[in-house]
Figure (cartoon, rainbow, N blue to C red):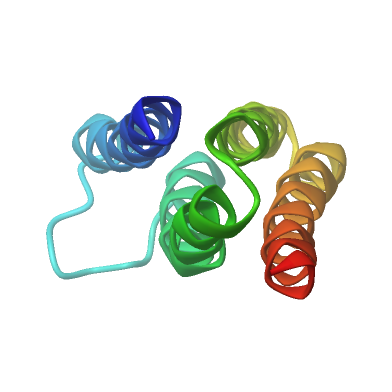
Length: 125
């Protein structure tokens, strides 16, 4: 399951990137911790990071279950699509919040694919 391991590292890299961007926004806009109030670009960076964290269980657990029950390549492909969706989500949100929707849908569909792949793999067994 080496492809799934690489996909896991990519998913974690996306999360760390969003955390870095939130920290950078905190520094740029001089918003001291633990405050969550600040200008719109700071709030967008914080929301991207928090939403990505909220989505991690919907990606990581099904990723490994799909790898176990459907196959490594299928799971890794779903994980890669999830990463693309989350990056598009973040870049869209940073530019203008309504532009996040396509990336969000891509990430959500990738998670649903991984869940569906797990179910399909279990049914086949």
